[in-house]
Each structure stands twice: as structure tokens, then as C-alpha cells.
Length: 229
Image (cartoon, rainbow, N blue to C red; front, side, top):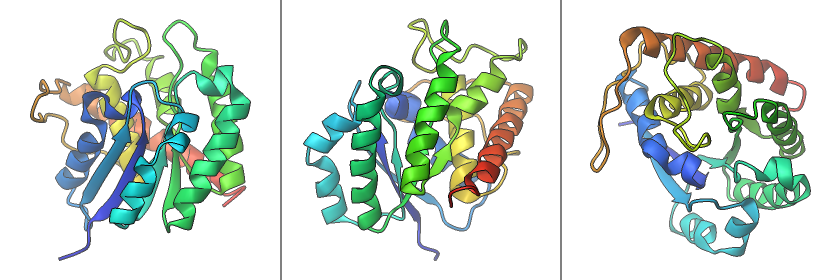
């Protein structure tokens, strides 16, 4: 039996919300991948790279097991409000994870609902970090920006204008699948539940659109990464 793809997710509520890593695993399973996803998450609401650096949970996880890949996600506002800290501690965490043998991915998040101009800043700050670490980008924010232009699609932000709806997390999960497995998520499952969560409710047409948008965003960043990988 093939070895699972072991992925360590390090972030905060944008990673934990709506069981994102489990959604990615379910999408992978529905598409019959050779290596099923085995995720482990280290998340605390609002956490920054600095807070993760000052804790020992990553060290403990690396000591207890081997991971093929690691995903880093910063506080959603820090790349905008404190870009120096974003870069400094993103580099420190990234080098630690790479030294442990992990291929590194950076989870590029989305702009707040009423501040779409944030996306350009997020893109630039995550790209700067990716270039330095020779890391890959998971462009959830890119996919969100494209989906938000389609009035036929449901809301991606919840009422706080920051966190994702189920649909928003599903779109991000499709982007993760595309970057982790290097293939399109088109045809993936889109109705699933987890213990303690409500069902993800997306129409077939909406799911198909999300899948296409996710694959397009992933392909665009894959081409861009040829500049530094």
C-alpha cells in the first residue's frame, strides 16, 4: 500500500476553520490519488509566525514523526501591518521545516471583504518570502479574488468579513489539492461532513466553478515559481 502524503499545517483559524485539512484529504480521496493525504495541524486562532516560533509545538511534531510537506500560514493581517515580522519569522520557521526534510508551501490567504486592495500586498509579501525560501505558494487568495468577481457564486466571507464560509474553505481546499498533487481538482467530491461540523452545502455548478478557478490559480503560480524554483 502506498505511503500517505504526510502534511504538517501550521497556521491559525484560516487553516482550522471548517476543517480545511480534512476537506483537502476528502477531495484527494474522492479523486483516487495514489498517496492519500494524512494531515496534522498546529493552529491557534490569531497566531502569527512569531508566536509559532516562540512555542515548541512544531519541534515536538517534528520529533515525533516525519512529514513530506509543511504549510505555513501567517495571521491574515500581519503581512500588511507588520511585513518585517512576517518576513523574519516566516524565514525562521521555513528554514526549520526545510531542515527537517519538509518541502515547504506558503498559504497565501485572502483580503478582507471590504478591503480588496489588501490582496496585492498579501501577494507581494508571500511572494517575497517564497522567493527567499524557494518555497511554493498555495494561492487561495488569488482564487478568492477571481471567485468574488462572479456574482453567481455564494459568499466566501462570513459576517466578520474575514473568515471563510464553508464555500470559501472549499475553494481554498481545491487550491490546496491542486498544489499538493499537481493536478486539477475538477470532478472532486463537494458534499461531506466531519464530526462536530455541519455539512458543506454547495451546488454541483458552484463546485465545478470553484474547481476550475482553483486549478487556474494554481497553474498561474506554478508558472511564476519557475523564476525561483
